[in-house]
Length: 461
Ligand code: HEM
Image (cartoon, rainbow, N blue to C red; front, side, top):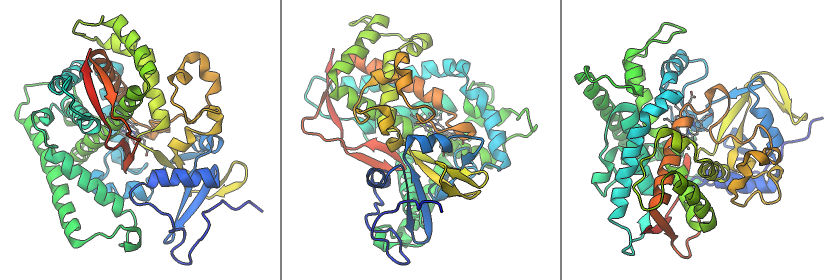
């Protein structure tokens, strides 16, 4: 009686819809299928069933907390060996989720953001010192790796008082290298059985490397915690201090050692990968839309006149509305966390006709939801003015969700917004960005999305 959910043509017995699966670019692959198969489709692979929702109306239903809630799904389950019961990978009913959520919330209030502002500013200034050495001399600067450095330093210093020294070396910090390998291992181990067919075979050597990487991540984090414990008189207002000293007012519980370690790893990853991608995509759009960059600069120069060294206050950054719209629009087209899973709380129908049983889940494919025709005929075009308050009526409701939805949405949203707007403001104030001729946006995927190979020449203004 109910219509069948569409699926790709050429379903193969036992294997399922394996033709056309992409292990390296799963999100863009899912987007391409969404364009062909419509607002909802399913893909069966080796007995797993994945439902992708990319239509605005259906996504708005899934975002309804009364009917649906977060589910980890195979992708986040695969991250459990890294994050365990840390906030991001915790199951809804794990007690450590609510304890950690309550303990950490004070670390994300507006007054907490005010407290991180100076650290964020100092970190961006390290970037500009680094970039000053490469400007006006024809150097092609690789943007994404440098954005990784800024955001890793920012969360390390603001969250845990720990410096990775990213700018004192050309090399990636070994923590980042180990983290990227561990993420890639997790991505490839999503399907429990080795699947050479999908290019996802895991050798014994990579498994061994993965064990070493996880041990190394834990070691770095234990060092972060130990260095704080060694200096107890240095009271700081940060996430680590909250976790080490405060009690959940609801349950009266505190976080244990192992959970604190899981949270620190979670924050170092969740707090830097996505923000770094957001900054990189924003710079890609700004470099390729000089008229947008000029408007953003006009706003920036009103706060800090050209020529002088800007000394932004927290309030001034919060007032950069146009730049904020640039970021909003960037995260509309390329939400760097490309989606999330929602499971039905009870048996239900979505769209009034597709049945979901309690516990059944669907993936909200954000980049496609954010390009639904409901956004207008130019949904694929970059236009920050969409986010002007006077255009609110032309945006579809309840579907712009780059930071997720409901109680499990991003706790670091304000942190990310402040650090990225601040960084973009200082960069635009100081440099003209010349994009590499002939570069076509290449989006790499490792759970999060980032522009790959994007380079600019910097000219000091
Ligand atoms: C959760 C996106 C920055 C920490 C999430 C979720 C999304 C998201 C979509 C929900 C995932 C789900 O439902 O499965 C982003 C984006 C960011 C960003 C696009 C940057 C532009 C940050 C930062 C931090 C952070 C800076 C930390 C300082 C977290 C944590 C969770 C989370 C801990 C799990 C929350 C919970 O389940 O209780 N983020 N995030 N994120 N994010 Fe972010």
